[in-house]
Amino acid sequence: MVEIDIPRPLVWDYRQPPEDLLWRLQRIAEWFPAFGRDRKTVRALFTHRHELRVPSEVRELIEMYEEAWAEREEASMGMGDLSPAQAQFLDRLDASELARRDTMVVAPPVRP
Image (cartoon, rainbow, N blue to C red):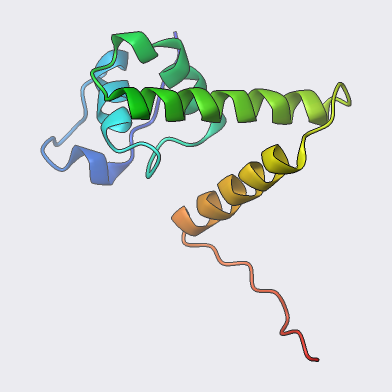
């Protein structure tokens, strides 16, 4: 069984979050994509997307993240190439993940 960690800000109303996988996924899905963009969580959200009570737009966004992660894995194994749009999406995904972790990557200033 997959074990999904739930971010502390999402369990403000619990001392300890329930162990139930669907409960955890539901709580994360309610805040997706602000939380839950890592590969393991996206895969679990995608697998259980039809069991979650979320708007169709959130379900479609989960599907987009799953597709992007799958394509990234495929590309990293040398089995395919990403389109420019897919690469841009993954770059934004990486940047937002870094921002979420309060980590900043600062590029040196560009001088004309």
